[in-house]
Image 1 (cartoon, each protein chain N blue to C red):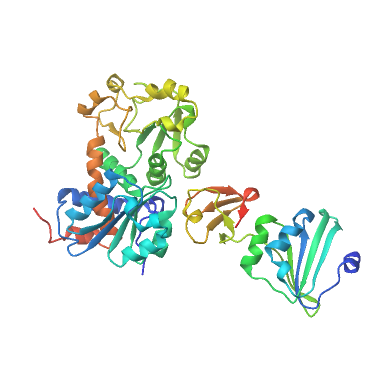
Image 2: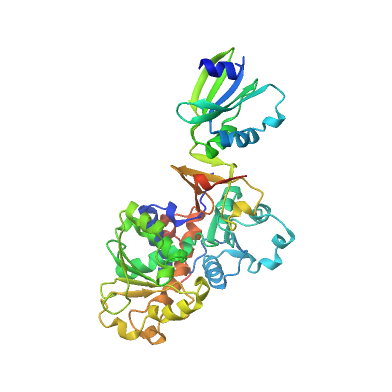
Length: 315
Length: 148
């Protein structure tokens, strides 16, 4: 049987990404359906992540599936020494699909190799988080009307932030220009800059973060600069406010410019920006629901045509 | 050639591994589990070599190795020559090349990789001198790898 698991967004072609965006868009029109009536979705969170889990469980529930699983790894047999394989084999007897978050890198790939049912990677350590990337793409597409030829500014932690790396990977099909704005300690790693060169992705590095630097942005993607990433705390104190987006910095922003943030936000975006038309981070999180409805259906072999001809919509 | 024949006796059937850097010869023996081999093993150590200065050679009578056993050798030294001998004749001679994928041979350097935490085989994709873990996507340089 074809393995329909979703481990990384890097495996998806341009056509596949566009297909998933179309599916998400259908779900946004009618999020409540009985498409998965009688099916069981398992959410196995070996590492707590309330936001991602709620989003997946809401997506499954709104499609009519029943949800089983655990939110706290302390309650599982993993603490008794059970292997991941054994847990997956056991749960796959019960569920039609497994959404899995794990603290170890590569856990989703391994689970997809041993599991008889599709696995959706809801984050494996610092490695991949494809559903976040999918909702980012959907948000960009929705706000810009296209994914092609956009000016995308990435701000904050570009070294450890897996969301920005996955976004680079996914956007390689759409001829973007990326702009990197980060403190030196958290600058975009050379391997990723080389990835951009190898994939014909244009990129510009900026030292400053002010209204002039970001004036050309279509998308301003903010990420959290985390204290624990710095070896020298005084260095963190020195740079932390330099990457705070302030209201007056939007003076020259393009009308279509939208601010994205994977959330949670701590000290990256001034709260006064929340009411601006440029602020999009809460809608972005909402888009996660539609993107995850699309990913669950795709993994179960449900097509865009099935969704367009769906007679189970609940109005 | 004449000198080599004098120093290391020919075998009727078996495997010859040539062009081993002398400082790697004990590692090669260990990887091939030669201490458990019952047939004759002849080792030429620190032999003169025009190309390498000195080299070592191992001849193992009545023993043939699998591709995955040989792939381990390619990880620790890249220019080994393999000769298969049958009835005193060389029936196959080739460089031991790295395969495109190394399965269950080297350890992932990332302690947070699933392969270091589950009873499972590692898988690395080989691109030139770079090996990429197929699970956690971390890269490791060939000269820094640790065998399992």
